[in-house]
Amino acid sequence: MQQMQQPVLVSVIVPIYNIVEWLPRCVNSIRKQTYRNLEIILVDDGSTDNSGAMAEKFALEDKRVRVFHKENGGVSSARNLGIEKARGEYIGFVDSDDYIEPEMYERLLAVALQENLLMVQTSRDEIDEQGNRMEDVCIPPEKPELWECDKFMRELLLHKGDCSFCTKLTHASLLKENHFPEGELNEDFRLLVSLLPKIPAVAILPEQDYHVFYRYGSNTRTRDEETFPRVFTDIVRNADRVEEVVEKEYPHLKEEAVRFALFQRLDYLLHIPISMMKKDNEFYVQVCRYVKSHRKEIRKNAYLTEKNRKYLLLFSYAPAFVRKVHRLLKKRSKE
Image (cartoon, rainbow, N blue to C red):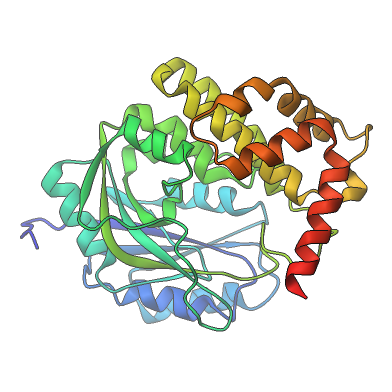
């Protein structure tokens, strides 16, 4: 690793809300980092269990830990407070039920300084509630790669890139000027696509140093068919926003952006409860209208799979019927 005469301070922000069971694993994995010049910012977002007290205990044990308590406002609000309080030159984030490998920040910072980058990214894996490793959501590169911002945007539009800020180390100047959108769930994607035009390149490391703990009951992770997490509406809204960014900054990625917008709406339609597929549901009606008006693009878009095309075309004609058939087939496959 590169020798640094004056160690750079790295701020690691952890939003906390009623996570007392998993918080020790998370915080201890940060405290065990081989890169020692960290400040660990724990933001208690109005927890009603003992998470806040546990955070204070960590601060007594490790002088690098700083704790802030606030009224509940959501993960973006907690992260933004952490950014305001951060004193580091670079900022990282760890979700309070996830954990990281000891070398993660040493690896990330070394590359950031060596290549003079504003953002670097490690790879990740996902662990289920039984401790089993799940199929990779984002495929790690075989060796370190340097992506220009338009390539990163293209990978995001094709659902190959990782939008999470938890896998990234970001220069503080970017985050001090651009905060996470509050009141939204797909907040990482929205902030990242707005930052990419300001970033010449991003380094992608192959090591899966970040471990996502896949818990049912959080955001998109539910077993209840009548529960419709709000994230499915947020991903559609963000698809509209990214089309605007692409039109302005990356017009050569228009076909990929349309593919992304259609795919996000397909995800929405495959998850919305049938009971919500009503004409008085304005958002649902708008989604259906978009799909119907893009039948030509659905047939011709080179980035949609044949299965995507078939589902989208079927939804463009009879959305409620297709949803019922899909739910029936899904149940039969589990029997």
